[in-house]
Length: 248
Ligand SMILES: Nc1ncnc2c1ncn2[C@@H]1O[C@H](COP(=O)(O)OP(=O)(O)OP(=O)(O)O)[C@@H](O)[C@H]1O
Image (cartoon, rainbow, N blue to C red; front, top):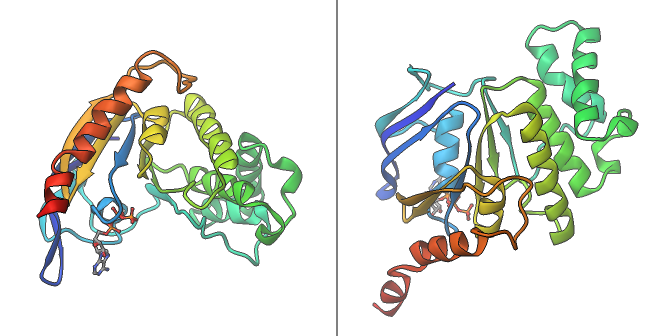
């Protein structure tokens, strides 16, 4: 799987939200899209998901134009968007079943991903009976169970308390070491981006301002060599010109 965004632009009415966005994501790569609120991160992710079409340029997966949503691109949202009337296992088995697996096979796939996120004991519970972190783990398992070519995550841990958020980052990395899914992860936390990503793409005002490869070995901790320096470099790009713009 290779994702290519070429010279993509998006407007809402008169407002240009994204311009000249070029981005390539290789198979098994984990890319974080980082930027301040309103810079266009979700708009870009929604175009890759196929929920929005670009006004300029094109988006391709393995050379095929993205024309709409597809099971090949699994999305995990901040509010996890689980079906409240389905059990945890039914939520996870839903994708494989819709894709044509028999009921028993879909349940088996569901159980396998439930084990992966450590929630096998909660198979028959309903989402409302779980904590926020557990619900988000179900959301991740559900997205992975449909075997997407690319996993799209839009601030998936944004609504969690800080301790749960730390735990979920570790959990996600553990899953990534095991399955190596190609992942695009949107965040406005610099440390989260450096903790998770192979590459951090920094967006500002609808354009890609810079990108950084992160070579720190996993499992990462914030005090590892290179972490602080990466924080400073990215912070610098994010803050550059902000002061001037604020004064004008
Ligand atoms: N459907 C829409 N119609 C009109 N304007 C929109 C629409 N969706 C987003 N916008 C505007 O586009 C801009 C970029 O929004 P987007 O959600 O992509 O930003 P973001 O970087 O993901 O922000 P956040 O981190 O706060 O989620 C914002 O100013 C937003 O108000």
